[in-house]
Image (cartoon, rainbow, N blue to C red):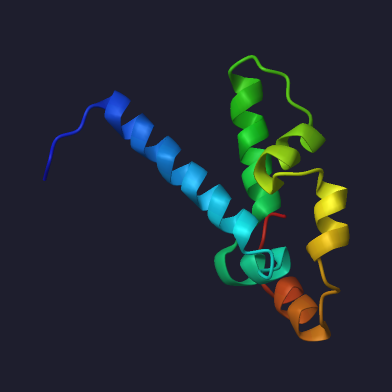
Length: 101
């Protein structure tokens, strides 16, 4: 295995995160509830983690500001443009899974 430094690891992790966020911005057809049902996290989780990291570093970031960083626009605007109503099957799957959300 190639040895990488902590600085390199952090750079690569940041690049992977940026690519994931860009991918999710382009895949507006993928609903958060589907992500939660399949993976246990969604765009809102990413924005919460982003906010927690910023706040831990001393940068006060609101929930809305963090969501805009992940969604690429205000959350309410994204919801109006892209969110569809959850189906009964999606809601059943969501409620039946063990979650800390």
